[in-house]
Image (tube, rainbow, N blue to C red):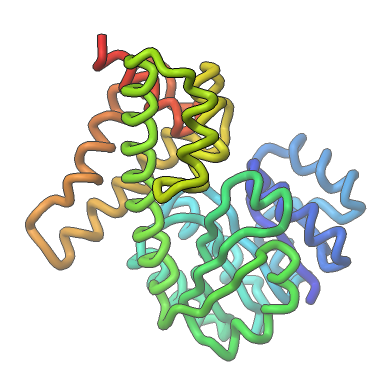
Length: 288
């Protein structure tokens, strides 16, 4: 399918590169023109002057932006020029309600919307191995699947519109809990004076082993917190989870609340653009 990508941050740019390698990439759009020009030159595709122009030339449009308002802005921008039966796959992390709103907007234009949030970080985007959780119409997903395979290693249909984003919220809450557990445990081990590289090696092979420990354990111990997954973006995602929780319960979920407080403190200290493993900084501070 002729594919366009809107949003060329760390995730979107790598998705675009993999689509180009697979022969699907037609055109890209990015608010920062210089970034778009650079990628378009490398991928040998066109740079669209606007989202509306991009929509005129594509059968599949992948959106990868940061916030709910950005997604709706892009959907409204392409709505007037998108061709009937065009598929828009949004890989951003936004609320389920925003996904449903985007679905309705594109339905008015006889186009299709899939909420397709992804997990796997920059590494997954670079390697084309992202996990993609999809909400929307399953028949529409099947039409796009062979193209989406270029950017995701595991694509699972969840259910109706908004289901993909609700599943991503599950992922983000779980990631927060893992971050809390790993950073706190490693800070404890460091406080005990243990040889922490050896600790990470052995613990990674046991019942407490996990991706975050394996890929971030030694870097955080070395004081390296390069993104990764920016702490400020995870804070944004958890704020969405917090709002979604209010739809069915008045009670706060403690992992969400605690992590939001901790991230806010780190953001105030200037660490918002670091990887979420920067939570280790706060755990060390708490140990004195």
